[in-house]
Length: 453
Ligand code: AMP
Image (cartoon, rainbow, N blue to C red; front, side, top):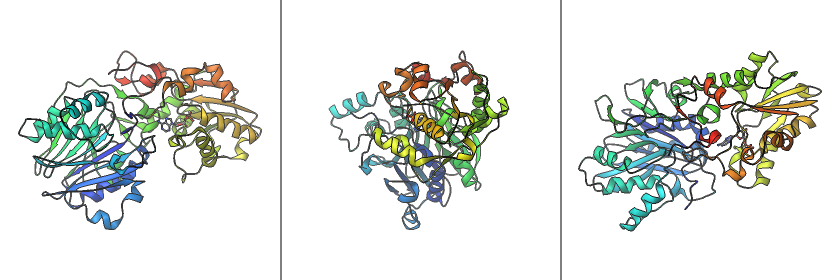
């Protein structure tokens, strides 16, 4: 069974707005960085659900004409990221089904850790699956629940699943938003200017549609949206926060507020803290764009070493990470990033990135900087060594491909051909996001191997 489906994605839900699907569409544009493989929206006109989904970017999947068909005052949307090159649009979301209570669409960000177990037991009882997605389990669990009311069926279903989930469900007349008890993946609630509501993976979607942040959906909380009512909250689980720290490190957009704090500020804090780790004399600090930008600014502010743009990024090339073969990844890094020779030539350069995963990007960049005439290149990373894969919805490769899990820091430094290499340590990372190891509020499994479920 493939485990790589339904990785880091984005979800959005709009409730109580005449142009719900258009707002969902704009929101998905703001959330495109969370998944570029497929996109989809389901809307409800009160009697019927309408769905459009396909592989491709939001702007490729939707156009004025097909958006018109997504009528109604509520909508849910999704962008999907997956490493596997599956060309089935069945694996795009929303997942839609008709069942005894009517129609339902579900969007999911996260990864269910007991998906296989649940699926096997459902199949043994006669269920037929159409996709590889763990999210499809939920449809079956809801359809099979003996409870009369949908809300009770949703509670039944989410109690059968484990792992990471930020979910939005759309029925013909209601919308539901639910976050797992650990709050692994983000999910925020906002108010639309007309009085309707929005839930989304990141608040950058709120800014685009003019919504204001109300609060996060709490870990373990189910929110019910019903016409002419304020959202009703049910505590399905006692919250035990274990927020994914990688959202702060790399994944979320810097203009979002995630887990109640500005992503940009957190990244700048990380850069400032990094400046105190193995400080080194240099002429310029440059970021690996775009991920390393806020941390490089923080580094420069703290160290007093001037910040410059030393690498240009071609924004029309997709993320390098998603290509399955090493050869393709190498090629794509070359296409994507080019050196600013005037900034680099003859200089001692500190280059800041948010993370090293396989080491491909750093190695390429350092070679490129040396070829452009840098006299020294010092690699600084604003997070600890990525040593362990994520099972809660971020796409990290298996342990054997994670360079920090197979090499010492010195070996990595040699491999990437840097003059020196330093990472931010776990304590400093947690401090940068205003926490401590003792607080145990964040999931740091990708850096520590400490898994929660
Ligand atoms: P690598 O070349 O494998 O070492 O990847 C490191 C680069 O990928 C860094 O520049 C990161 O900003 C970026 N990165 C880290 N994690 C991810 C991820 N889950 N998906 C896509 N890119 C990532």
